[in-house]
Length: 106
Image (cartoon, rainbow, N blue to C red; front, side, top):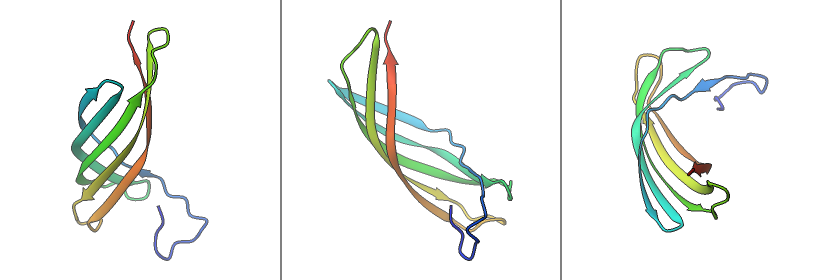
C-alpha cells in the first residue's frame, strides 16, 4: 500500500483477516459466488485492529474432470469498508483478482 509522503524504501506489511460467508450457485460448468462477512485491518507498525465489512462476488468455470479432480478458475470483485476508529480513518477498498481451485471427488 502506498502512503502519501512516504519514501520508496519503506516496506510495510498489512494484514487483512476475514471470516467470509460464501453462497455458491452451480449451473453445469459455471458457478456464481456471493460473499459477505466481517473483515479487519492492521499493520506491522500499528497493530490495533480496525473492523469493517466485505461484500463481493465471483464467476467461475469448471474444467473437465481428470482422475477424481475437477479444476476451476474464476474472477472475483469485492468492496470492503473499514470503520473509523482512534488509530485510523475510515477506509474503502475495491479488490479484484483471479481465483483458482480444485474439487476433489473420490
